Amino acid sequence: MAAPLLLSDLYIYPVKSLGGIRLTEARVEARGLRHDRRWLIVNERNQFMTQRQTAAMAHLKVAAAYNGFLLTHQQRPELLPLFVPFVGTPEKTLFVTIWDDMVFAWRARPECDEWLTQALGQPCKLVYMSDMVRRDVEPERNPEGQLVSFADGYPFLLVGQESLAELNGRLVQPVVMDRFRPNLVFSGGEAFAEDGWADFRVGDVLFRAVRACGRCVLTTIDQQTAQKSPAGEPLRTLATYRTEGGKVMFGQNVTGPGRGVLRVGDALTALSRKP
Image (cartoon, rainbow, N blue to C red; front, side, top):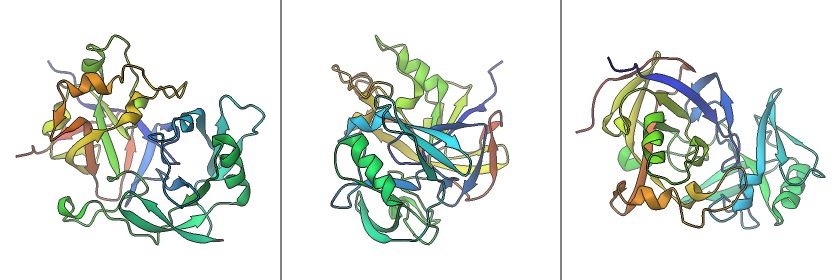
């Protein structure tokens, strides 16, 4: 008898492209899981920064704190932990660019900018997306008008543990799930079972798997050392059997209903399949 499909892990990433926080329970909101990617680091030109260009961002770790989170630099102990609230305040504002979108954002406290500038060795600013901002999921795949935070394009990313296990069976050096930065991880089923799903339910919450997630060089960065794989793994191996339309696919981009609570251990049920 096949093992049941269960939600095995929940993650939020309060600051885009920094470390995640593992949860046992999370609330689903209009832009994704509560507090997920509502903060963003931008450069002097107010353009978004990620590990794609600045691998050293992997050195910045995120830990939960009361009503917020702490940022630490794992190789710079002289930088005292920086507290950042989960929700920003509208003291100063600016427009920032993320991919093809320009959105309104609130500035963080000046000491946040100073801390990050020291930590990353280049001028940068920390900004927050308020509930007043509307950033839509790509319109051609979004008839329901779903919103997204500072995530790349979709409010949720789903990955099966069996999919990672299958990939690791092909690698000389296995990798861990944090290379792929999922929000929802499930156990059970076959490797890449999630590829075929359309509508599915986790506990009482409905979701829709819209399309596979195209992966980038970030997956080749060890999140503990901030070092890129000299061999380009696991992207190189994935490319040999998971390439579609010139992109390497792993995991599913997902939209949701904008409400509900998820708990680790919730049953996952596939309700319909993609055409």
